[in-house]
Length: 355
Image (tube, rainbow, N blue to C red; front, side, top):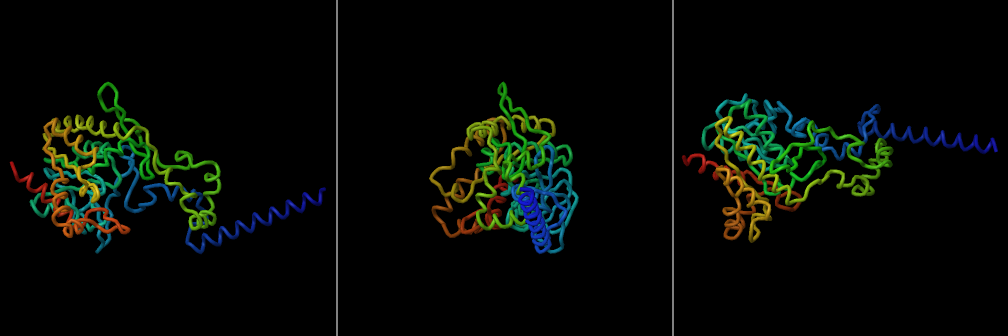
């Protein structure tokens, strides 16, 4: 019996050492640090680690763009406060400018610094436009960002560029692989919760005991990502919804009251814009979650811009031009192209110049 136990022990030890050798060798081959104890599933899920070099954790916002990202000749540049620059150069922000806040449609995903709509608007009106947007934000994060930057930048105009579905993001505690702040409605008011926003960790994402253990093996992670990626890294871990979609829209309406207080404190001119994706813009009616938010903004006396009417008209009467307003992302019309951002900036220009 002792010989059997000894044999099993020796076999197990040999197998363990062999696996360690394979693990080390595969890490070296793929230039993965030998000493890292990271869980590779969490690396795959975490919105910040998936955008290393472009995003940083923010205890109030969850995530935002990193400061002072610059490479000569690149198409993505940021400056102070993580503002995206309007050219491939870092300039300090000027006071009395226009502050643009939104999600990836405002940040300019897929286009160069000078092709985002804030950059094109700056060229049109010859006034500084500060792009303080970040991808995957909800309306809640946008309003908190406005509250962060209003006392720092002292803008004269705030443009809140909402993609219709951003109101639905208000209903999430985890969105796209990142923890975010969220609001609850109590006694007719939006109350902030979830701050300081935690960083993503193995325990916080609740990925299960097997993935907590075996996710530390790069060899196993690499193998399973090629055999069955959707089963190994479930997309469900990237999202945690805590409210209904309808409550998310209701939160956007209540957040307009926070903007109203901001307007009064800093004498801001506030413009709330509603943007839509290509499929939404060509539908017979705008999606249900967009118009109510614009109505709430108008009720507070804010100026509004609705991109649905001009985009719908183009979809119906000039389909070729309509298609050119969007980037081809994996065979689908995704973010706006330079031409699409140009159309949006023209809408803002016309409103800003109308006093």
